[in-house]
Each structure stands twice: as C-alpha cells, then as structure tokens.
Image (cartoon, rainbow, N blue to C red; front, top):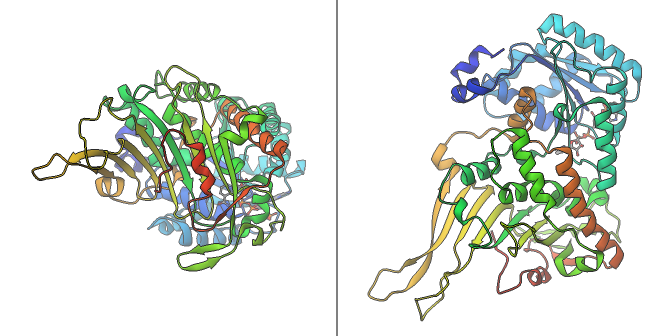
Length: 508
Ligand SMILES: NC(=O)c1ccc[n+]([C@@H]2O[C@H](COP(=O)([O-])OP(=O)(O)OC[C@H]3O[C@@H](n4cnc5c(N)ncnc54)[C@H](OP(=O)(O)O)[C@@H]3O)[C@@H](O)[C@H]2O)c1
C-alpha cells in the first residue's frame, strides 16, 4: 500500500514506479539507548515529514527500564527536538500514538511471548498487517540472545505473505570467526533476503553518488582502470578523539571500527565492475567479487604495507587536547591504534598494478571523508620549464562539503605557455539545495521496502574480515607498539613510506 501523501513527494515518480512501502511494525531492541534517540526516531520522523511512512505503522520499543508509553514518548520527543531535521517535531506530535514501550529482558522467552501478543494487537489497532521489522540497536553482546529468541518464538517466520526482517547494527563481529558465527546465528531464524546489515555510510547520498557518477555517465568509466588510474586514496579522517567511547574503542581500534566496514564498502563501490542491474543481488555480487580479488597479507608482509599509530597530546583549534592513553576508559599502556593506513592490491584485470591506499584516523587535522582517483601523467610532457603540472585528480567528497571536483592543468593567461592547476567543482548543496536526509532515513526506508542494495550481505562482511584479520594478525605477531602522532596533525610521518613512486598523501 502506498501512503497517499507520497504522491506529493518530489521522489514520488521514482518511488511509485518501483517501490511500495507496506504497513509494518518496527520493533527496536535497545529503545532506551543512544542510537534510538539520536538517530533512529529522528530519521523515522524525517520519513514521516516527507510522507514516506506507510499508513499502517507502529513502533515498539524493547528495553529493560521500567518506562511507560508516556515516558518513552517524552524521551523520544526530546530526541527529535535535539537531533531531528527541521519541522520533524510536528510529525512526531502527530504520530506519538504509534510508539509503545515493551519492558523486558532480551534473554527472557516470556518477553517475546508478550511481544508477539502486543504485535498481534497492533495489527488490529494500527493496521500493521502482520509485517515486522526488528532492529537490533543494542550492544553486540546482546545480538545472540535476541536472534535466538526471535527464532525460538517464531517471530522470525514469515506467514501468509507477511514479512519478518531484521536489521543488525555495526559492528558485525570483531573478526572473521565471530562474524561467521553471527552470520550462522542470523541464518537460524532468517534467510539472507530477510537480513539487513547496516553500514550507515551506504545511506549517505554522496556514497550512492559513486554509483551514479560511474554508471550514469559515459565519460568516466572508460578511464576507470589500471591503464589510466595511477592510484586511489580513500580517507576517513575524524578531528575528534574517542571522547566517552574509550572503553568501546579499546576493544576495536580504527581498523575494525572504520576500515573493515566503511572504507571497504566505499572501496568496493569505487572498484567493482558495472553490475548487470541496480538490484540488490546484482550490485552485491559485484561488490563481493572485487573484495575477493584483494590479496590478504601474510604476517611478514604487514609491516611494509600498513602503518599503525596512536594519537598523543596535541592541539586542535588552538586548544590543548589529551593523548589517547589519557582518555577515560583507555589503558595507560594501550596498544590500540587510532590511525591506520593500508596499501591494498586488487588482483583483477581492471586494477592490477594500481594500488588503493586507505587511511582512517581520529584526532586528525580535519574531519573529511573523500575518495581521490589520481590519474597517470600524460605519456610525454610538452610543457617544459617552470612547475610540472600535477596529475589530474577526480575527487569525490563524501563529507563535509559533499561534491565532486576535477583537478586539471590550464594555461595561465599571458604570452608564455605556463600551466597551473585549476579545479572544476560540483557542490551538492549549491546544485540541489535543501536539507539532505540523514543516512538512517534512507536505510530505514529501504529495509521497510525490502531493498537490500545499500546493506552489506553476509559474504561481503566475511571477505572484508578476511583482509582485516590478516592485517591484525601481522600486527599482533610483530609485537610492536603503534607509532605516535600529535593530535591535530595528519598522522605519523611514517605513513608517507606506504606511497611509493613519488606519490604523496593528500591533505583534504
Ligand atoms: N550511538 C550511536 O550513535 C551509534 C552509531 C553507530 C552504531 N551504533 C551501534 O548501535 C548499537 C546500539 O548503540 P547505543 O549507543 O544505542 O547503545 P546503548 O546506549 O548502550 O543502549 C543499549 C540498549 O540496550 C538495552 N539493553 C541492554 N541489555 C539489555 C537486556 N539484557 N535486555 C533488554 N534491554 C537491554 C538498553 O536498555 P536498558 O538500559 O533500558 O536496559 C539500551 O536500550 C551498538 O551496536 C552500536 O555499536 C551506535
């Protein structure tokens, strides 16, 4: 069923031609937590404001605290006020009745029995038609008992044409074997098409624009290979430190927290072959193929192909900031990395010999996520004297200042033939204006629609862990401490050694 107000939405033509939201109940496990308040409910209200929620809709919050429906709604309203897009509070006020609270412990079978009764009641009361979407917004340690109980209680079963789907938050495992165990557990209750593994980077407009840029245009794809591309740099730089998440970060480190998921996902969209269609399976088949073509490292190769470092005391925006080991929840002798740079080779016809350099770090000089495709120099440089022109770079800026830029050489006006680098710049905000929807809006909508294109499939997660595990194993075997870099800089100087042949890291 399509919400009538959808027809007034600017995306209506696109959506109604192929996509229909069906009524459903969304059950949020971990509904008193931070993610629900800061991201999920504000995103739902963004969808409500744009008329994209189905008419039969309900949200059941599941957590331990003895909250009433009233206190749950008050807390969520507060979240929408603080974190929602403009005008979403009015949508929440209109839709408050759709939110109910279900108190229970994740491990208690009785709580699932009463949840089922509650969902049956909502089918009658709010027209949710037996369709259920379960969202695991909990610490990963709870996934196992929730999945077990959903399977045991029969809530994961799809009956009479209704759907049952599960959205799993990151992190999906902490290495390949825990991810495989989690995949096995998910599959005890759900088939792959019912499973939606979130990587919120895939919900970002600019990440999806990688597909549009590559496959909606004729001019880029012919150059998109080892013949023309010298190398690719993918950067996810954060200017903040670990803040209050020190305890969590100690258990993961940047390679597990960012590279395994966000950077590998972006890499696979940049490097994959054109899919035969933009369907979930076709796109993900190509993504997994390119991940399979990436060599994992033998332990003795890791030192030469990676750099691992931890921020030390420094300054940011004129203020002194603490080093990582001085942060709350962090061991004083911690060896957890807050910066990692990796050189990857993709062993296929398209990319053989073109390195992909990935780096991610906290407390770097600027917050920036970008993909830089650096092209080869022309075979023969005609313009002698003065500065050599820089290689052409196609820059995909994912955040902030979302857009695409092309750097090329142009003649400096005047009697001499002098070349200077200039940029052609497309900015999302200027071209399209308006407020961009949060990544969670798109992902929640897609999960309701049953479209898994922007979610990681089990085999993608597995391949990404294969690569990351080989890096972590090399670091563990070497027994070396991470290098240091001062907070507020672009990371350790040693990272330059990964880039051979006169290449250098960009400073976004
Ligand atoms: N926060 C973010 O911005 C963010 C961003 C990206 C990804 N994530 C991921 O999202 C997930 C949730 O993060 P979060 O920050 O929202 O976690 P959180 O604030 O720690 O919330 C945990 C929730 O789980 C509930 N809970 C824990 N054990 C329970 C049990 N045995 N029975 C019933 N309820 C239980 C808690 O309820 P009670 O306290 O009421 O028991 C609370 O609602 C994590 O996987 C995280 O990695 C979070």
